[in-house]
Picture 1 (cartoon, rainbow, N blue to C red):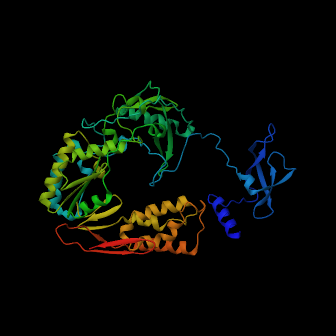
Picture 2 (picture 1 turned 90 degrees about the horizontal axis):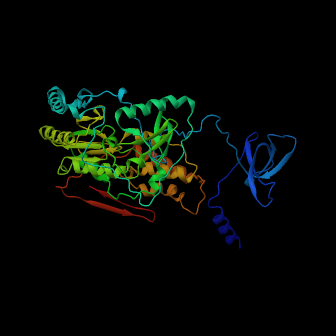
Picture 3 (picture 1 turned 30 degrees about the vertical axis):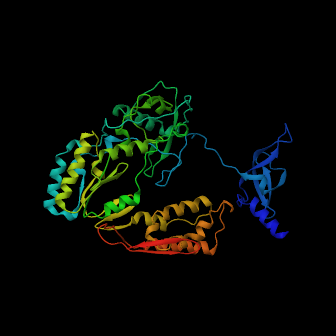
Length: 477
């Protein structure tokens, strides 16, 4: 009987989380409604006066402090004060995955442009640097702070049978109204957007950036829900890293606001409309945040680099060129720049690096036959706070797991943490000494991660395998 009771309790408590309140904290109380005693609603706010036990609290109404009432913790929830003037959705900008894709404004006037902004490898020496600069000067129009406009691709938004979706504009804080007005004016001058009479409308949200400014964003989630998925595949990151890391001379280039260089199909333009307190506008180019934008962009880049797979590859707008000799590298870079020019695309010069021995690419440092994790990413993992919920555990495992190939016996080390994510366990995790040990061991293993060599397919490979009750792995040498 006790075993059955324990199992039943564990089942009903699988989504439970521990709650507690401090004396003086404001709470809402679940009470029957006056109009209908059979229906309950959250009422308040109330203020916690004292705690009688682990799950019992005495509260008083903030409007009338004369009468004290006692409630179980299940009848209480925290009360959050609402901002008086801010009604826009604002969330801190982060490098991790966001709840929906964001859209950044150009700020073109603040961006330098030109070949002089391109970074050349310090290991090249004066002679090779001069050769590289001479090559870049042959393609002056390719390097610009202004996005190009290609005729090699068009973005479609297929929503068959869907009636137009219109959402109201979010109210803006007075402090950012003029900033948004200026940003809209700048996009109009660039020809990126135009005034709209579309029946579609998606709201604009504001995201504070680390430098104190705000980022202009469009929430296309409702349109994305009814858009047919483009199944075009994205390249595998590990395969790209294997290709690039074998090169002795590396060049990476980044398109200038790459999405804005692809036109939007005429029938899709009304669906891109976004609503602001200053009017309704729509995009003339592919906006950030639409569901199939990555697939459209990757298809364009793959077509651009078709036939160049022996020395060039790309993940979205991050294009990498790799060669074994300097003479080959000059020829390879010239070939890629020529195709970019012919497609009427532009590169952001300050993000281009030419003739490097080692580059940062997709969260890794690669070059001269070596791969290793990017130090800044490892530093962020080392500073990761102790997780308290399943979501936080999954976030840590997702970030650390991106570098799992650098950690021997990763599955065994991470097992106490992966066990916390089981569906049968509550959302709030029980952090045991075993979990703390695994948490610290994973961090330590990443700081001591070995360098991995780029594969040489002309040589013999040796595979060592191992398995346990909790994981399996292999070593390739």
